[in-house]
Length: 379
Image 1 (cartoon, rainbow, N blue to C red):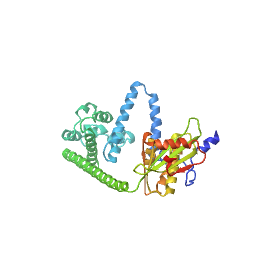
Image 2 (tube, rainbow, N blue to C red):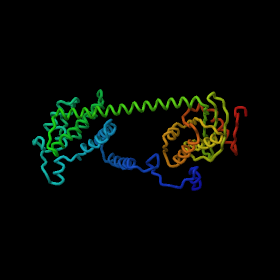
Image 3 (cartoon, helix red, strand yellow):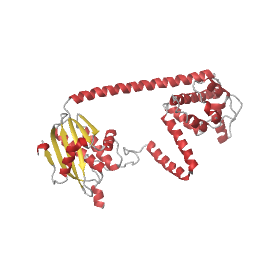
Image 4 (tube, rainbow, N blue to C red):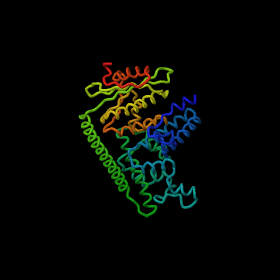
């Protein structure tokens, strides 16, 4: 059993030394992002186990709220600001006083109430003036203004209305300007007019939208350039390579069939290879692609399209990611071999389009030594 496990470990072509691999990341590299997700997943599972039926609904609403915030098309600093607002982490006077017992918790702008997050952003006299003339209104959430988190949850539920995401984005900008207005009064003793706060929020929002639109147009231009380059490559001599890896049930052997053909569907070469199976179809297919690329490089072909029926594997190769440690080694080899070609792309095909390689792979299960044919259809 141990011997089989050892033999099923792919060995890197470049002979790289063993290294640490973070299994929660498709690249194997630890990042704060993936570490955070693992912790939050564990925490989420614990929370779900402690919830009853009603609690599950609350958990679902909270998840929807955070998902909506992180996906909003706004500046990252505004997302951080909103995170602080929702978690009552904004340094308003009430929070500072409750933690340090220093200062005065009363709002310095209106002097009519304790300065909480809800007061500064929703209920202060100045905030009410801003919301009265704001270009976006949330009338249905007025009864929730005693708790900022509940208020935000309520308006997130209304994002399905026409231009809902845009309205939420502008709302966050208004909240941000209300906070900046509060700080102007707190630290510089300057009071903004409500109209100025609203105008600044609109201006920043429109500037961000314009910058985002320019970025999208640039991306479109790059896509067009890539398409032109692709057309130029397609006009050159191109070899389509179809690959299939077959393993019979309970067998430790895999038969690999590879056929290379021109764009006119003329088969110019084929290989039948007999290898030890990794006991995993995806790993066997990745090994088949790696071996085929070695054969193609020796042939001297420089423009190739690698085609396989394993759609998930093709997606992982194209993204440079892998679903597990063993597959990562093979994907790394494949991407290294890709550099040997002028152009090498990967795409998924159906079994119907891969019948020749499947037949060759089935034949390869019964051979001892690898075979190469220059005209396999005549053999």
